[in-house]
Image 1 (tube, rainbow, N blue to C red):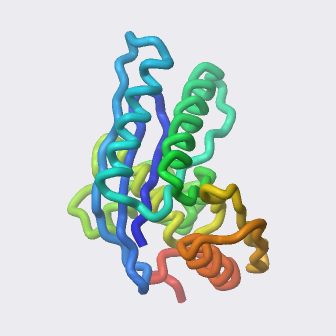
Image 2 (cartoon, rainbow, N blue to C red; image 1 turned 30 degrees about the horizontal axis):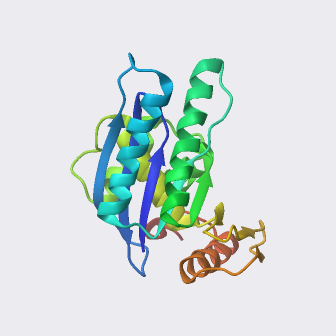
Length: 208
């Protein structure tokens, strides 16, 4: 399965793509950041980022896209622009007709490091280790996008829907419920999510 992760940001938007095999081993396909000029009006900055997201989707053809959920912070302006980028990214995914998932920062941290309160350095180190890289990609936004993609590959929760706006949810006990017809990709991820909820979601190499 090929998963694209997006770490939304108006100045730097992290974009990462990973392949995950049947044993859930992840390998790097692409990583980079979409940058926008701070001197441009916001709508032009969003257009620049959206064009970059469209280009990555078109070139690497992910089967599902995962985006990190934005949470309120002290800096309201930062939250507002980040949410705008998230909306632009969701539009790109919708235009491509792909399933999309949204994950919280704590879910991402927990999936890649086993600790929902891990700091950025810990997460970046685990991303490099999981993907077999000599060091984590820079800047941090790039590494974060890969962490988001890995999180979805290993957890699978948060899947929203595809072109017919179907949705799927997985309870804490691993019970799967869906609205509408699932695509084969959605079904695979949803079933994996249910199994992982029942057994725990950490790097399988470290599961005891």
